[in-house]
Length: 389
Image (cartoon, rainbow, N blue to C red; front, side, top):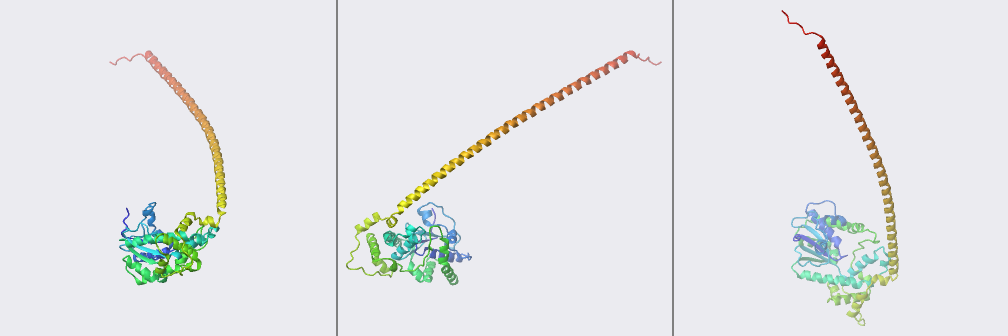
């Protein structure tokens, strides 16, 4: 169990200032801790503080990684999309949300209009309003429960952050119990603002995006992009979840134009039917299914061809291995014959040497015997000497 008492959890929804806020917190707090090096953005910032709470707590599919140092009293800055399971979080929660209609528009551009896949670009905004409106209102209900709990929560609207980042970031610093070094604070905000679009966009380049990850960060985009019908569908979603879109936008300081008197609200039954049958991409590009089937068939064909090629290569390899093994066996057999011949020659040479030693020894014995016999004959002929008087 990880002790999160001295953690900061940045809890947001996508496209609601997550990167901007994370970059400020990481760089300002690092500088307070004495790590006043280069400004960290995107990949570098997440390498220094790599833990995402939904990985090591919610999904539990990753291990917790030790982060870079932070000032006294803080141990880590973790990120989480959404506000689930934060009521008992013992650290500091910094929560960010933007108004629901701009949330819908911004996520629509990111998930559909910014993609390389041309089919996704054909999906109209009207076909995804319900999905994103539902995601927003569910998250807002979670946040309301979190704010009513005993958790330490600081909530900021994305619109306020964009309008006055100095105030919001200063409030965040005080909320987590850290001093406000004015010079360091101003320099960090300047660094983050100067590169917030460029660095994030460069780090998000991939083979799926054709447009920047961060478009412009402007508010009130919904006024130019959403129709009255789109807003009515969003109203129906809010009503289904016990909320009111008009009241929510009023609280956000973005009142909606009044609905025409002759325009009845969308009934819940119609919304449920829509949600049950919704398939935005299939409805926008009906021929996509056939094209995807053709692509899948082509992939299967390529995989089958690759499998056959692997089998052929394996057979060739086995044949080569068999030939190599046969040659090795022949070399081993030849080596055995050579070794046997060498052993036979050594035996023959040893036998010859042994015979020569035996012959030499026999001759030497004969010579010694002849000499002894000659000495004995001489002793028999020579008389013994008489004793002297």
